[in-house]
Length: 208
Image (tube, rainbow, N blue to C red):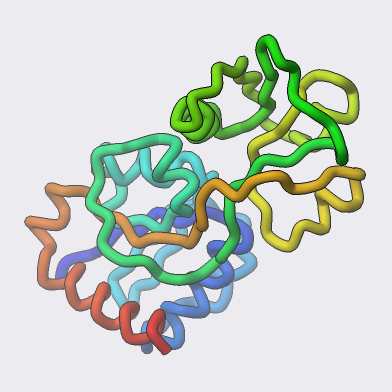
C-alpha cells in the first residue's frame, strides 16, 4: 500500500480535519493532535503528516513533497497554485469581507486597502471598477483603519467578534471560505487508488 504524505495547517483547520479523518475510520495517533513535531507518522494507515503554516500547504503539494494537503479556499484563491482541488470538506467555515470604521467613506482619489490577501482584494475592487492602493500586512490587519493607514481592510471573518472588539464594522462580503482537499497532479496519477479511496471516505463524512 502506497504511503501518503499529507500537508496540513496547524490550528482550527487541523483540529477539524483530524476529527473528520478519525470519523472516516482512520487510525491516527492521539499525539498528532498536540504534537510539537513538524512531521508525524501514522504507521497504521501509512500516512505521514507535514504540519505547516496555512500558506505553505499548497506550495508543498505543488512541488510534490506532499501528495495531498488540506488548505482553506482563501489560500487557494490567493496563491493560485498548480494543484488538483479534489473535495470541499465543508470545515472551518468563514468568509472574506471588507471592513472599516463605522460611517466612514473611502478616500475618493485613491482608497487604501490593507490586507494579507492582496490578490483577492485587487480582483474584488478591479471587478467593481474601482482603483485602489493595496497595502499588504501580515498581522493585526484591524489596526490599519484605526491608525489611519487604510480606509478599509480585506480579511477573514469567522464570528465578527474581532471586528467588533476593535470598533470596526463589516461592509461587503467577498467570498465564502471552507477547507479543501488538494492533490499534487503527479501523485494523483501514481497513487490514484489510495487518494480516491480517501476522497470517498471523507466525502461521506463531509456530507454527514
